Length: 127
Image (spheres, one colour):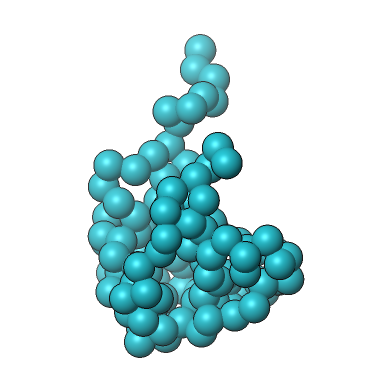
């Protein structure tokens, strides 16, 4: 019998209004790879060796409804590259102030085309 553990793969699914816009943000902006595409409204993106991926589902019934606390945080263990932020903005993202000042102190928050927030945090997970 299997139980969830640290090596279990994690899928984060999100509805999106425009799949092409979401793909530009996550792939061209952040640098994730397309791991799988149904060709009809479903796209999985991530880093091939990561134990997680983001599933983007074109909204038909469930419209995106992100809040300021719907965060995907990447702990970089060092300063973030401003060029990545520029690519994210060029790909449809918007730099946003965080509801929690911790994220503004230790990184940058970028809202994706649907309003979900990505935080590039310069701290490590353990700090």
